[in-house]
Structures are given as C-alpha cells and as structure tokens.
Amino acid sequence: MVKAIYLDYNGTTPHDPEVIAAMRPFLEEEFGNPSSGHLYAVMPRQALNTARRQVAGLLNCAPEEVVFTSGSTEANNWAIIGTALALRDGGRHIITSSFEHPAVLNVCHFLEKEGYEVAHLPVDAQGLVSVADVEAALRPDTILVTIMHANNEVGTIQPIAEIAALAKSRGTRFHTDAAQSLGKIPVDVEELEIDLLSMAGHKLYAPKGVGALYIRSGLRLETFMHGAGQEMHRRAGTENVLEIVGLGKACEIAARNLEHNRRHMQAMRDRLHAAIAAGVKEVRLNGHAEKRLPNTLSLSFRNVEANRILEAIGMEVAASAGAACHADSVEISHVLKAMGVPIEWAKGTLRLTTGRMTTAAEIDRAATVIVEAAYKIQKNRQGI
Image (cartoon, rainbow, N blue to C red):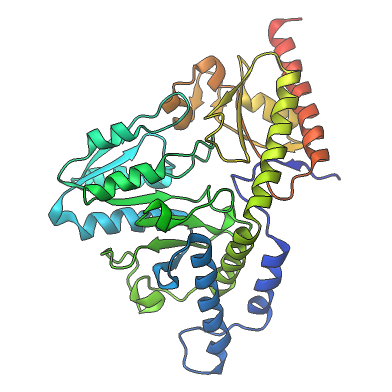
C-alpha cells in the first residue's frame, strides 16, 4: 500500500535519521540516571550538557538559560504562570492576542479565573498583531506580554522584535511561543530581545514529549515543577535523556541547514499553491502573503466543507482542516475567526504544510488530488 503524501508538518514532523542515530545509544545501552554518582551516569550527564549547548546554539543564548521540559505546552504554562506568580506583587495584567495557540490562550483563561486581567488583542485580516495596539494596552501593572512568533494555522509571522523592544522599554517581560518558527526561520533571542521562549521537539524532527523553555539569565520565574534538584534546581523530575538527546541533535541540524531547508520548503509550498490556484476557480490564501512561514499554506475553498475535501483526499494526501462541518453547525477555528474570514470561505479551509522531506513529485501529485476533489465537490454542489 502506497503511503499518503504527508503535508501536515505543522502538526508534527517525522524523526530525522540523524536524530534517531543520536538517540539510539540511550535507548539500547546508556540507560543511567544523569543525577546518579556512579559511572552509569557519566554518558547521560554528558549527553544532557551537549544537548543544552545544541539548543543554545540554535537560539543564540547561554546553555544555562535552557531548561528542558515535556514540550512547548509545559513551557508555555511555566513561562506564563511562573511569571504571574513571581511578579504578582507588581501587577496582575497580561497582554496576549486572540490568535494564540490554546497552550497560551487556555493558560491565560486559567489566570483570569485566579484574579488576573488579560487583554486579548485583535489581529488584522492577514493575522498580524498591531504594535500600536500592544503599546495602547500596556499599563503600569502589566507584568507580561505573550505573543506567538508564528501562527500554526496560517503561518503569519508577528513583529516580535518591535513588540519585545516595546515591552522592554516599559519594563515588562516578553514571552513568545516559537514552536512553529524554530527550524524554519532565524530565531535569535538576543537580536529579538526575548525574555522567555517556548519550543517543542516534534516540530523540529525530534520526538514528541520533549521541549525546552529559554529563560533569560537573571529573570525571576516561580518554579512550576516541584521535587528534586534537576535542571539546575529549576524543573524537577528525572530528565528524559533519550528524547533530550534527540531535541539537541535536531537543533544542531536546524541551525546547520536553516537557509537550505527554508528555501526548499518555500519552493514546495509555492509550487503547491500555484498548482491549486491554477486548477480551482474559487480559492483564497489565508495569512500574510509575505510575512509567513516558508512551509505554511492555508487555503480556503468557497462554499466547500473542508471535511468533505479531507474525506476525498484522505487515502492519498494527509492534511488538516481549519473548520469542522456538522449536520447543523460549522465549527470555525479561532484563528480564522480572529482574522474575520467569511464563513463561506472559512468552512472550506485546509492547512497544507511542507517539510524538509517533501519532494516535487509529491507536491505535483498532491495538487492533482486536491484539485480533482475540490472540482468534484463544487460540481456536485452546483448540480452540474
């Protein structure tokens, strides 16, 4: 059976062969606890140190500013709740956007129930947060601004450098969820003046269940995971050495091949877009045309349900939808709602994301399958 063409790299990525090779010794032989005091701990402990340097190399930070987590969801929780608890005596106001991943939005909703006030900034039709809106929302009691670097659904890249600089000028902490941007575009925490940054291994061709939080040196953050003294006494729990090794290697590869991979993913994305646009009459792009992740293509097919397209192409193309249509209702993603995408377009939204392994032959086949499916559905709807 031929495998379906994979175009859901923003959902998760396959393991890079180099990542698998780096992890193998810690699956088969090096099982020791890095916190132990005997010889079995030596290799795992050295591996943790190496991985920390590899992550730091991708971010341009000091290794001791990297703390390993179970993924970006934990990192987001820790960055936001840890800041809220550490700085609550100085204020209880937080700024975010209506465009964030649930791993940020739901954390903010939780804090609202705990007495914090959260400003949810709008985005424009292309998914951009206005720096002027951030400035207007800042108050003397604002303790944190948390804005994602790039959106997972439509790929829009936010003006993080400008927002971070603005927050810094007001003495306000800045956090970004960079799970989708790392490995696709440059992310330099010094250049961008970021205080806290969340990342996930499984968006970087590393395993699921591992990530990291960058914490700028000297920044006060309430401990989120209590227990023993692992991770420089910042995050308790025996480290997931196997997967941390994979994350470190993935970061090394991402830094080494960033520009080559960026060009390849963008070429595949644009090839797919051109082919679909040429074959389907009513299709529109969601997100910013230029300020967008090089691999991300969000397309809406007018008056066509996304789940019907996915059903039609599912045996040949793996993608994801921006809306779910039921018998009596349509559930539009909060991202498309925030951008004000009209429902006749939004309900027919597909997210198609390319990756390092995507080939031109796969793109050409996927485009043919998608165009044929959309044409048939539109034809049946019109009764032709």
